[in-house]
Image (cartoon, rainbow, N blue to C red; front, top):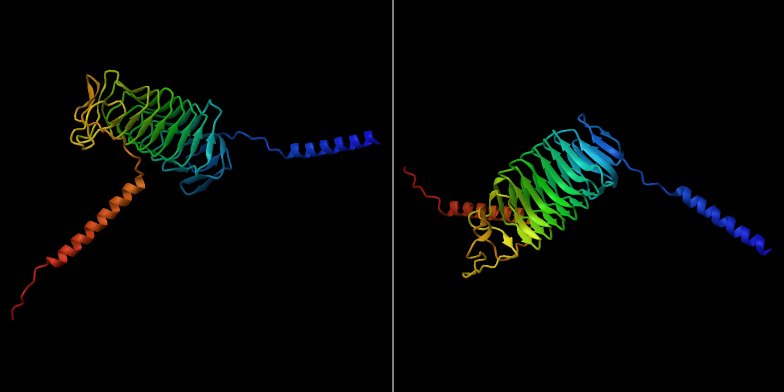
Length: 311
């Protein structure tokens, strides 16, 4: 009797286990996904198209290659996950592509832009890759509002006239930003913290670098005989190892922050620059514009000349 009861319980357990096992879905890698030149999507059913806007509707295990101009790839907060070998999003030759609101992790390079111009990489979370973002032979691109963290390298930049603005670049073990063979780029209002090296500049000239926070990196800047512009003529960057004074209390150091014999921040800031969301700046700008417009309208009414009509 006891033996029969034991066998019955064992059989019931095995039945439940088999049913549960059959219901388990194995996570399947999507492989390489293409947004083709004709607008079609190849390789997944987890991206929804609406005109030129391509929106993720689920997490994806795989890579995306964009082969079409004027595309908006909206991650909608979902994750693009790799296996450490491939690249996450690749943009090459095509122009005017926006990648936004996407979590990109566990790739060789999270986002690659090669031979491509006028692209925007906006408000993505790019973590745990060998390199977060790589721009090569590409101009007039904007990288803004991204959180780039826990990679070996943060951003690598080669070529001119690109904008790296208002990003958080932190805990990257090698460097936060590497600029090589590139000039006339704008590196503005970034939080560059806890990296091996904050910015590494190799054989570059006339890059404009100001209103960044340089905090708690092993070495804030390495210039390799390059020179750059480290302030806007009135304000520079915040350096946590600046040891100068601010005698007049205007928030700007009385002496320059010396980087090396060819580079110095003439107007180092003595206080950490708070994060100031772009929408706040835009709201303030619109408010001021509206107030000025109303004031000018009232002024024009009160100061309008009077005329005496003759008979």
